[in-house]
Structures are given as C-alpha cells and as structure tokens.
Length: 485
Image (cartoon, rainbow, N blue to C red):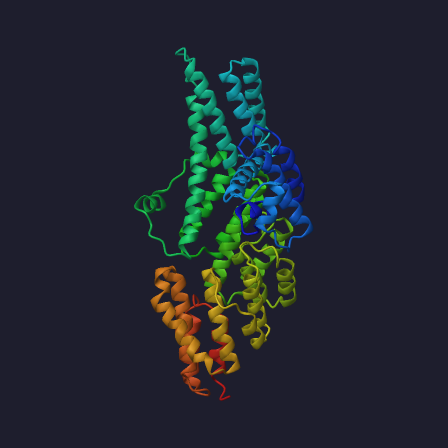
C-alpha cells in the first residue's frame, strides 16, 4: 500500500490538508463515483497511518477489511476506490490552488465572463472595474502585469466584438499594446536563458532561434515603459558576448540598484541571478583576480539576506556548489561550512543519500587538505553532469596529493570519458576546459621534479590558458615541480 500513488499523494499533503480533504470528500459534486462511500474512509485510514505509524506496513488486506467491513475480498475492488480517491485529492488541490488570494485576478476575470454569459450586466461591469483596479494597484510593469493586461483587454475586445456597432476600434489598439509588451518581455527573457544554457549544454540550435539571436531588436517605446524589459535586454546583449567585462557587470549592478523599486521580488531575484552568473564567468576568465571572488561573495551575502538565493525555500545544486567554491577561493572556510550545513536539507533534487551535499562536502574537505576524507565522502556517481565531473576531478586530485597508485588509472579513465562520451552531452567549451585539465596534469606528472626549465614551461602554458578548470591548483602543482622533492 505504501508504494501506491495514492499513499504517496496523501503523504505529500500537510497535516492541515489531510484534515481539510475529509469534509471535501463528503461533497457529492466532487465525490460522485461509484465508490464514493469508501473514498473518505480510505483517505482517513492512510492519513491516520501516516500520523501514528509512518514506518509501519499498511497491508492491503487490512485496508480492504476496514474499507469494506464484512465483505469478501474481490480482486481490483480496492484499486477502484484508490483511483477515485486520487481524483478527489487532485480536485481538492486544484480547488485550493485556484482560490488562493494571489489568484484574485483570474478568479475575477473568470467570474466576469460567467456574469456576461448569463446576462448579469451589473455584475459583469462590477467585475471589470475590479480588474482595472487590480491592474492599477500593480505599478511594477513586469511580464505578469502585461499578461494579465493582455487577458483583460482580450476579454473586453471579445465582449465588444459581439455587440459591434461599427463604432470605435473594439479595443484592438489596447489589446495589441498589451500583447506587444508581454511578447517582448517574455521573448527576451527566454532567449537570455537559452544563451545561458548554451554555455553548459550541447544543443542543436533551430534556425529560427539562430535568426532571433542575431537580429533581435526591441522598440525604444517598449524599453521606456518597462524596467524589466530594459534590464532584460541589457542582460541579453551581455550574455551574447563570450564573457562580459568587469565594467559591464558593475554597470548592470548599478542599474539594478537604481531600478529595483520598479521590479517585483521575483524579477529582481532573476536579474541578480544573471549578475552573479556574469561575475562567475568573469572569475573563470580572470582566475588570477581574486577581487572578483570577493565581489561575488559580497553579492552572495547581500542576496542571501534579501531572499534572492532560494527558490521556493530551496537552493539549486549548482548554486549551492558555486557559493561554497567561491567562499573556498577566498579562504572563507568557516563560512563555507556553516552555509553548507545550514542549507543541507534545502537543496533541490537531493536524494536520501544526500549525494549533492556529499559532493560539496568533499570539495570542502579537499580544499582543507583532508584528502582521505574527501575520497571517503565522494558518491560513486551522479545524475547531475556537473557533479559527476566534479567528483572525477576531485578523485584524481586527491589521489595525486596522496601519491596513490590509483592516480594514473583514474586520470586515464577520465581522459577516455572526455574523448568518447562527453562530446555527445557537453558544450564544446565546457568539455575543452576539462580536457585541458587532463592534458596539463599529464604534462605535470611526466615532468622531472627539479627541472626548472620544464617547470617554467608547464607553468607558463597553464597560466596562459585561464579557461582550464582548477587553474589555481594546476599552477600550484606546476610551480612545485621546481623543487626536487
């Protein structure tokens, strides 16, 4: 029973929702199936079990005897009740979601249409006035505002079209304006995300997307009307470049701070995410400039305080890793560990083994010189490609530091993986950064310690190729070749 979809669904309900769904099951409009009498008791049985004995086993035969007391067992009968119970909970959750306070606009819009169709002109006009007031109360001209405006203007256009007396423009001008604004905001935003994804994933770019990326323009009148669109367009132009310049990142930060009052929380959160990504790219391009890492750390601290790092109360795996790695780069070890432990249970997509946490913990252990503990902490594999690559590099570096016989075997295996498998799934730039790591490490290990000329040559090669992953560590190992030890 615990493996059923119904039980898993009830398990995801809050204690309050498990209480609320029971009277919901008594309403015949929502619970009208042939097994409606058994739906409520089944849901209540599962809820009580979750509360009183969550680790215990809920036998199917026991459930059947309680739901169908005194009746002989019939194959498939309980399953029919479970299907109806799932439908009921689905309707319960949809109803609760729809009637959220923040969904007032769509509720009012839908009721206006209902009133219009039923000839309730007074209620219709009252609802339309309410919709206009809702829009007027949102001074922030973001995508959601213009989407709602588009829906509102569309409803007005439809109503006026039905009673068209060949007077006026039947609201077409307003509808086009709202459509144009929403279209530009949404299009620029999605193209920026697409460009960002191209940096890490190998994608076959459709012809029309390629044309949009090359030819995208936005009318000045639209840029002047929406701070979200203006900033998004600046971000789009920055992300089209291979790497933005430090001055461009500083200008974007100043623009965000200047226009933040014109942005809602969600939009500000998205824009600061881009800003941090740009700063991270700068750090990769100029790994020798630690001032970039300090700037990024300050951004993390500021955004953490203002709630810009977490989405729905959680952190993405990649973001958690970048935050910790950046802190390690400036030797903020204590802060990095405190941050990781605080957010251990707030990582999106984390599994029961806490593999994402273990990868990042292993990264911390390596940075603090605890190589054996680093190897013990590393999971065997990961569904997240970036963490899989991180684990393999950490493994190789730890075995190198320990002088292990397994080092060469692991390095060779990683090189084979990069040549055979990664071209199919990695962007060429990201793959090349890992290939350079293996190539330079091979040059280091094939050099004779104490050969100053050779050490200087390898050091210069690494120093020149700043795009290589683990640039600082490779430089340190190349510099160590100057010693005969």
